[in-house]
Every structure is written in structure tokens, then in C-alpha cells.
Image 1 (cartoon, rainbow, N blue to C red):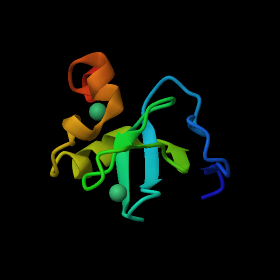
Image 2 (spheres, rainbow, N blue to C red; image 1 turned 180 degrees about the vertical axis):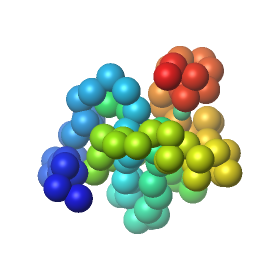
Image 3 (cartoon, rainbow, N blue to C red; image 1 turned 45 degrees about the vertical axis):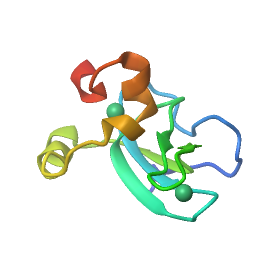
Image 4 (cartoon, rainbow, N blue to C red; image 1 turned 30 degrees about the horizontal axis):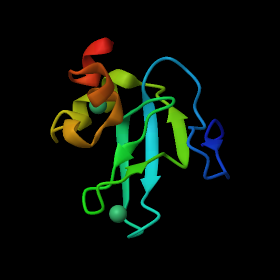
Length: 97
Ligand SMILES: [Zn+2]
Ligand SMILES: [Zn+2]
């Protein structure tokens, strides 16, 4: 993937700066658990299920084909209680698109 945005800092910010959601890769600094989400947003992290701490994505990739990703992604529920964007909005963050 040539358009992947790498982020090498542990700042409380995200590599992606756009307004729409993107694909994010997360790794918890406490338990090293890794997960990925196609509901990743600029400036928002997701909570680690075990540690309950907010984790910002270390890598984010703009969605090239959102509709195709949605097909696969809809099969598993989006963990709204872990998503900082959902909490900030007060509703399912996918509804903003
Ligand atoms: Zn953790
Ligand atoms: Zn969300």
C-alpha cells in the first residue's frame, strides 16, 4: 500500500487529518493487543477492550473503496462503546456518511 500514512509518535493525535472515516490500525501500549477498524477518524481513538484506555491508531489508511469495505464490515458490529467518535457524537459514527 503506497498511500499508507505512517505515524511514529505517541502523541495524542492521529496520522490521518481528513474529515471522513478511514481504516485504522491500533495497538494497546499496555497489553499489546492489536485491532483494526474501518471506522477510524482523525483526532479520535478507540478504547482497548481489556484495559479501558483510549488508544490512538498508529497507522491510518484512507478508504479507497468504502462500499466494498462496508460489505465486509457490516458482518461484525462496530464497538460503539469503545469508539471515541461515537461517544463524542452520541450516536453511531457511521451515520455521518
Ligand atoms: Zn490493552
Ligand atoms: Zn464509532
